[in-house]
Each structure stands twice: as C-alpha cells, then as structure tokens.
Image: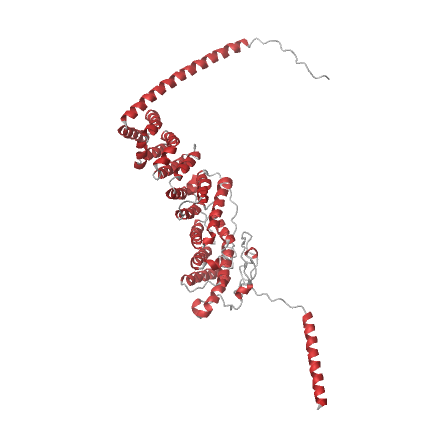
Length: 520
C-alpha cells in the first residue's frame, strides 16, 4: 500500500516538472503578432488618417494611393472598436442577409468602397469601377431608408471611406492673360471621378444629417472639417455645390465646431484677399456665411462686426469680385438688417474701395449702394451723405453710359428720393453741377434724357433751391474763367521772359578750367 502511494507521488512530481519545463521552453520562442487587415475584417485598425493605407485598383489589399491624395486627421481608429464584429462579403446585397448581419455588411461595403480608381488611366478596369459605384448607391439607399445604425465602428468606417475618396490636393493653378469677365464666360472644369464622388458626397450628407453629433465629433473633428473646407477650391461647380450643402449641415448639427468653422472661413478669405486673389469657392463660402449671419443673436458680438470690417468689406477689392458679388451683397445686407448702425461703416468701406478704372465693378458698387440705402436710417444717412453723393455725382458724369444710367436710376428710387428731399439743401448742390455738365457735354442721348428728368424732378421738389444753385454755378464759372485768363497771362509772361533769357544765353562766356582742391 505504501509502495503504491510512493509510486503515485513520484509520477505526479515528474508530470508537474515536465509541464514547468515545457512552459519555460515555450516562453523563449518568439510569438508572431497577429494583425488583422483592418478593411478586410470590416475593421478600421489602429492607424490615423495621416498614415491611412488606401487600396490599389485590383484586389482587396491596400497600398499607396495617387500622389495627389493627402490624408490628414487627428482622429485615432482603435482596433478594439471592431472586436466581435463578423466580416461579411461586401458584394452581397442587403436583401440577401438577415437583419442581424446588415450592420456588419454595411461596414464591409464601406471598407470595400475605400478602393480609389484613376479615371484618367487608359488601362482602367471599368467593371470594378461600376461595382464600386453600385456599392455606393446601395449604401446611399440603405442609409436613406433609416436602416443603418451609426455605431462607433460604422462612424469610423464612414469617416475613413470619405477621407480616402474625397480628400485630395488639387493641381496648381496657372495664371492666364484673360480678364475676369472672360474667365466668367469660360466653361467650368468637370472632375472625371464625379460618378464616384457624387455618391460619396450623397452618403456623407446623409451621414452628417442622421448621426448623433456627440458620438461623431470624435471623428468629424477639426481636421476633417478643415479638409472639407479645402475642397471648396475645386474647379468642379458640382462638387462645390455638394460641399456647400454638407458644410451648412455640419454647421447646423455640430454646434461645437461653429467657432472653428467661422474662423477657418475667415482665414480662407484673408488668404484670398491679401495674398493670392485666386480661389474657386468664395461664392459658396459666402452663401454659407449668409445663412449663418441671419442666425446671429442680438446684439451682435464684436467678433462678428470685426469679420464684417476685416473680411467682407475688403472682399470688394479683388478684380474677381463679380464672381461672388451677389453672395457678398447678401451677407452685408444681412448684417445691416441685424444692426442698421452698420450701414455707415459699410458705405465708407465701399467708398474706400471704389473702382476708378473698372466700369463693370462700378456698376456693381452702385447697385449695392442702392440696396444698402434702402435699409439705412436717417441718422446714419446724414453721416455719410456728403462723400457718398460726391461719388454719385462723378458716376452721373461717367463717360461709360451704363454707369451714368445706373446712377440716374439710383436717384429715381423712391426711398432714396425721400432721403434726398429731407436733406436737399446739402445734396442738391452736390448733384447740380454734375447734371449741368451732362446737359452740356454728355455724348449719350439716353443719359441726356435721364438728366433732364432728374432736373425736372428736383425743380418740382424745390424750385427756389435749383435757381440758387444755377446762380451759384454761373458765379463759379465766371470766377473760373477769370482764373483761367489770369493763368494764361502769367504763362505768357513766363514764356516771353524765357525767350529773352534764351537769346541772351547765346553769347557764351569763356569757361574756366576747374581747379582741383585736393592736394596730390
């Protein structure tokens, strides 16, 4: 009995010793780290957008993308997010899987759409491009139906897919000798990748509309928003229109990003005004900002007033103002609607940047002045009426008949005419000389007719004042004639004296050699 127990103990000890030795041996063998392919396993991996690995045209493995593409983001996509998510073949239709698998299929399709194709490549595989487009359309329909659940893995996959497909650096712009008005008539450039980009933008729009901002703000961060704003420089107007809608939705839903978006838009405008004067998306950015201004609370913050003074008013300076002038005027009118006291500041700014040699810009400025004056209070009008109507008087005398006509139409505006009537003793003398010069010298018959109508209207307003202005103008003309005659006589005397001196200089005195004052 004792012998049997001893043998059992010896066998047990040998077994334990063998196990410990085996563990020590195994611990010395280097283990192979298992890294699952983030996209093939319907996950995102541990990379940042800065080092994102996009795919090649063929196969499921991801390699280097086109050199023009640049990925930037501060969001980290931890691999632990995808723990427990079952990978599903992305080519399967949503109708062919159970409701439990639809979410996994949604993420798999998003990862499949991270493949980027070069549409300019003559050796491109059309079939694979069509498959990707059909997959993108399926994703748009799936999200539109409300079946998609934007969990953290789904948000991660969505942001990754949008970043790889959309974020890219545009080729440098080459300056041409064409004028701004010729460039407006040029046909726009269309991106050959638009069949895919359009679907991605539709998907992104629905994503930012349906997702919970509190969850998504980790991935739709400042870097993501900044790269979207960079895309506004695209030459494709369809892309800029999609971006405008998406950025407006982000501004409305992601309240935490609002100050950053305003600051970033301001920096783009500053860069455009003071450095490059070249950007394709200023009109769309101003259209977004117009709706933003309409939502500002009263009283306006000093930050918003400074944006008006430092960004919006200087936007009248570039030669290409005609491309975005309509949106710019809308923004300024929204500011004045919020705070009528800003009208004087805006008009002074317009007078500061008033074009002197560009008649097309001058037409736009006169139209904008008319729109602003319709909203200007009497107190603000009286502060700026003297310099303003001096400038309008110059426009009345413009040799460009369209500018002269537009200035006459401004004076026919009922609201402006009422302001003039209440301040006629100051304004009419400023306009009278311009109207009189038009009557005597202007070449265009339509302008002459308009001038006669304005004179008649002002006579009906205050005939005595017009007679006084006429008398004063005649006195000024006589004085100017006397000054001109006096100036002519003065020049005549100078010329005679110069002629006498020149005849005397013909007798030249001998020239003495110069003496060197420096001792050698």
